[in-house]
Image (cartoon, rainbow, N blue to C red; front, side):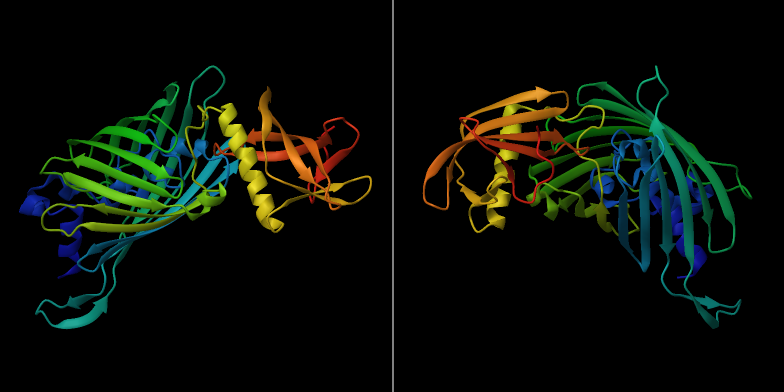
Length: 426
C-alpha cells in the first residue's frame, strides 16, 4: 500500500468501509492525536477528561497536570496492525505552584515501497508523523475553585508540513469524591485546507470508594463536525490489580480516535504490596472500526496520583491502626521475626513481640497518633509492657506513612526509640 493511501485510511478512519474522500474526517491531519496517550484512559473508553491524574494529562486535559505533586511519566506503544505503530512518552514535573508536562508522540507506518509513475519500485520508505506538546497546570487563583491548565503542540507530518495548535482545560471538585472537567484541545489554524482534530469536551467522574472510578465524557469534534460520547470505569479488587472497561460511541462518518465499541484493560501495580503503588504496567484493547484492526496498547506508568487530590481519602482509626501494624510487620521481617528496639541509655536491644492491646488513635492536625501497649521480651528472658506511639501522616497519594515513633515503659521509667530510626519525638 502506498504511504498516501495508508495515511488517508488512518486519518479518515476508513469509516465503515466508506471512501475517505466522503468522510468529513478527511480534512483532518494529525488524527492520531485524538487517540491520546497511555493505556489506562484507552481502557476506560477514553472518558478521562475529569480524571487526567497521571502523566498522560496533556492528551486529555492539561488541568490534570496540577494534580501531580511528584514527578510522573508514562511510556506507551500501540500495535495497530497493517504495519502501523503508535508510540509515545510523556512526563510531568512539579514547577512553582503547579506542574509542567512534556510529551512526544510518533506514528509510524512501517516500511513502504516508493514507486515511480510507471509503478517501478525505486526505494523503501519508513514514514513517521511526530507530535511534540508542552503544558502547565496549577490551582486556580484565590477565590476560584479547581485547577486550570494550558498546552501548546506542534505536529510534523512525513511530507514536511507542520501544524501548530494549543489547548486549555479545567477541573473542579463538585462535592466529596465527585468532580467535573472540561477541555478544548488541538485548536489551531488551517494549513492548505487541513487542520488538527480540534475538540471540545466535558466530563464527570465519581470515586465511590478508594480504587474505583465511574466516568463519563461528551465531546464535539470541531474539525470533523461530529459529536461523540464515552463512559468507563475502573475497579481495584486488590491493591496490585486494577480492572478497567469502557464504551465509546462515535458517528459512522467520523471515526477519528476510535470507533463505536467496547474497550477493556488491566493494570498491574507490583509496588502496591509494599504500600507504594508508584508504578504500573497497563494494557488496553480498543476497537478502530471496520477496515482497521483493533488496538492493543501496552504502557508503563510511574508516579500516578491515587484518589482525588482535592478530596483525600478519609482517614479512620482503623486505617491508622492498620498502617502501624503493617509497619511493625515490615520491621519484624527485617530482624528475623522480631521487632528490635534499642535502649538509648544502656545501648542494649530488646525484642518486641507483636501484641496490640488497648489501642487508641488521636489526631493532631494532619498527624495521627496511634497508641498501643505491647508485650516485650528482654534478652535476659524477662518481659515488660511498653507503651508505643506511632505518628502517622497521609502522603500525597493517599497512603498512610509511619513517620516517627515513641516508646516508653508503662511506668514511664525509661524511653526507647526504634533501631535505625530518626529523631525521637519528645
